[in-house]
Length: 306
Image (cartoon, rainbow, N blue to C red; front, side, top):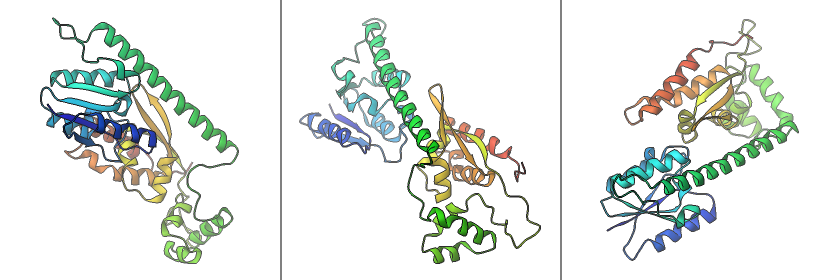
């Protein structure tokens, strides 16, 4: 019987210590460890996570799956019940080493129907709902704090490489036809910093061209959560990363959408970045989410003249 340890990368030292403790407690036999990559979103359904899928393929009846704490794997009630059903079908044992679920026998089922005992199911649903409420409250308080700071003029995230008193000069020079490379050398910053400063200015909009079209204005667009999860883990240009980080999460049942404000050109760039979600490696839900996002982006005007 093998001990299979599921781990997720964490920036929380306490969580890391708990996961390492699982390795020590997994048994005398050397455990087999399945650790998710750092870019894997925690919002993914457990059965869609690559390493947890590898664990289920590797597992054999009688093996024990070890997790440091239940919410390292699941996000809500539905996720927990789905995982328990899959483990039951594979005749796998489950051991939670810490948290509210650690003292429970989550595998207890009715001897005739094979369904979870009603008391176990009720307890799982209650504890999962409490955990989900706690996370939602933390998220709401975080966004309330960010909005309060923004109202006071404080912007979160990394400080821009170009000081605020020089930003106008950079934008004016860019509109006059100066190249990004020349501006980067002049101000001794990276080209990405210049692109961020002029992200909302189209390249063809220069003061020296009297026939230039009006610059595009920012447009608010809802990005499906599965698309946002993919882009958060992708390599983006600085302006694209800033745009994504400033998006506002809107809860949609078990999922969410990211409300992104950007000029249409940036929306189209982000759409191009998530092209892999149309490939065979993507799950149907990801392909559907990308199509929804593509329809919304394609509905945008070529240039916003409002």
